[in-house]
Length: 166
Image (tube, rainbow, N blue to C red):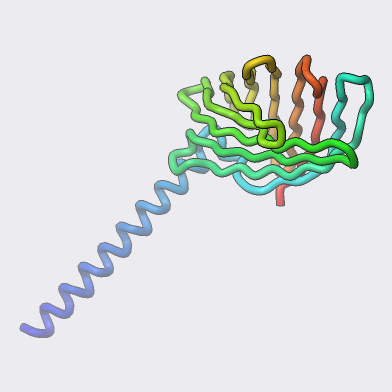
């Protein structure tokens, strides 16, 4: 009987291991098929910022996107800097169907607010607002390339960034 108990334990362990692998695969599949799947990972690149005084500056940027387990949640950070300008934008977004909503903050200026908009495969279009500030942000992803466009009436009139994954 000792042999039978040992065989049963091995089968239970094998079954539990197989179930764990299946559950992890299912979770990964959901994240990969969610509305934010193409955004996941680290991105970097350059762009241009247009300021309210009419000046334009080249900027260097890094973005990180963490996609939630079921693919409907996204945490984003975008850090950009030029020789004289810097911004640190972060957001926490949830998709319900094609609608997105969430919160954002710009830490170097201590500004935070809400956002809402739409998500389609490879693209997020949102309107962000805070006390005394509003902007539209469009993020488009195709393969390992991404463009980020920000338009506002504040200190930053516009931002255009091209990022590459990796």
